[in-house]
Length: 474
Image (tube, rainbow, N blue to C red; front, side):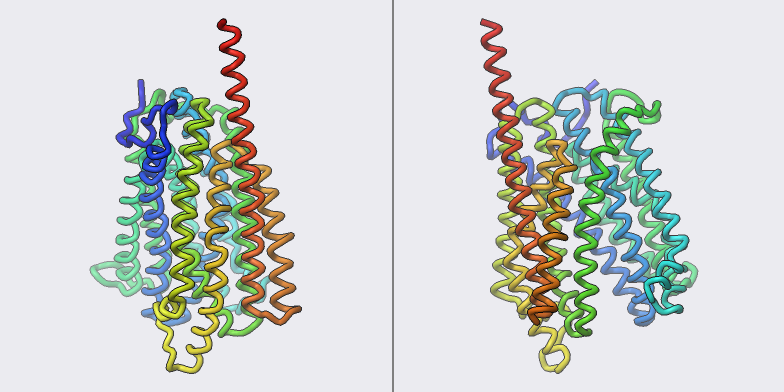
């Protein structure tokens, strides 16, 4: 039995995949994945906007509660990201009977990862009080997350499903379901917060309830798509513990890599907070812009690990190298365009966040946003390059060394530079952003050096194997 996948992206013969075909295949995967990522961000924006209709206290509680849940969830999702890598390798090697055991192992890891996330959410009030949050805010956030924790299994299973469908060349359903979830979440948020269209009035807790319902519906809808992709074997068969160990071995370094980067930017925000509300506001505007542009190379990196994994499974490293070049061209090319826009129109970007230059406080924020966006523009290309390099290395099943390299660059290079320039050289917010930039530049350099060296080694080994086979055949 063969998989019934409509995408031509993974049907390309690995022996004759030209650069043009790889470029098209990568774009075919990356574009819907990027839109899906943007829809996910849109859910958070929608929550904030609708919570704002009942006051800033609701925004504070809902924003901190959702931010905590989804940040920890993003780290734990790294544990199941190896599913896409292994499935892509299995498709390339035409060992399709491996796919069902990989999915079963991934589901087990997703459910296991949901447990600590739910336990943390149950005890979040004590954690927030430990960090000095106001008692009332800590209580409200805890109430919010006592509801939101019910979404933990759905959120992690959804991450597994999306990784699998991307590896199977079925990114379009991921995009469609994500956009539908965005719309559903917005409608449910308004209805449950205000008690409209026959729904109960729950106040700010209605936002958490809406998110839970939306994620479970999205997970079930995605499960229906997963079941429509025909593969050998049954999805409800026995657990292959060797596959579980392989997935866990790939996944935990991915989770750590995601964690050390997220924590770096969280610490940067805390450092900005020490400098006052104007600085923190400017930082929030700039990081929101950077987060939006980052979605494109992030999606391209996921497409890269699928395409590279597919070709490596087919034992065709030359095609894998072409896939990598296509991914870098798309992802880094987009970031170069984004950087140009930030250089040319930073003030216009600031105006999009309802900042009025005629208001004295806003004018100060706009002025700082302009300077931070110029720095952000400088590291856009490097941010794209390091993200795609990480994705490409995952396609080679290389996750542990990149974890160490990324952690070193973020915390041994980036953080000290940010601290020294920001506080000891008096550069303030700009110094902290320069530190982030140096960390990302260093990561881009070392991760790319590692990837291209590994790629050349695979090609050299492939050539030697082909030569040996030819000699033995002669």
